[in-house]
Image 1 (cartoon, helix red, strand yellow):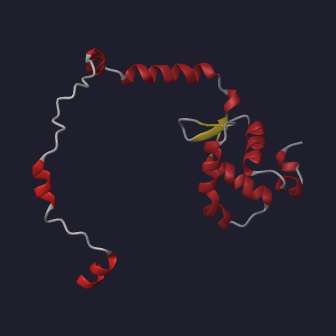
Image 2 (tube, helix red, strand yellow; image 1 turned 90 degrees about the vertical axis):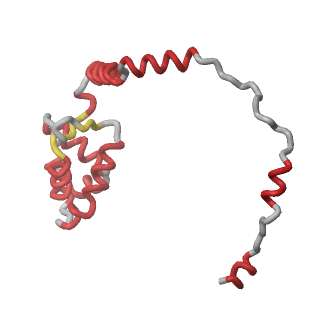
Image 3 (cartoon, helix red, strand yellow; image 1 turned 60 degrees about the vertical axis):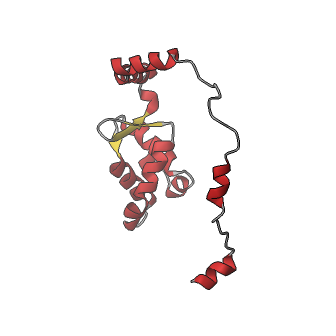
Length: 148
């Protein structure tokens, strides 16, 4: 049974993501966010202002659902129509492009540097620090209110 022929009561039991999944399965082609949401609004017989009020939430729900993939042209399609080889190959190519020679050199230099944890700082008590604190005044909240 197609989505268009389903009873409104049955459709109301489904989430927008589930209805989107059915629409994309039947359409056999990718659709943009607006077209998908307009179809859902029409199927559920919702008021027109629902489109403007809920389109952002609809987009967010599609982007977080692993069943859908957003294509380069801005259309949504079912992820299972695309092989993971394409996704993996694209990700590997992007990773290769990100590392250039300068980055490789800096990585090598960082790896060759030994961590220097020697204690060269003078940890002995410095009497000058006591002189710095002699003018320090601590005010509580009541005193601050009086100054204002």
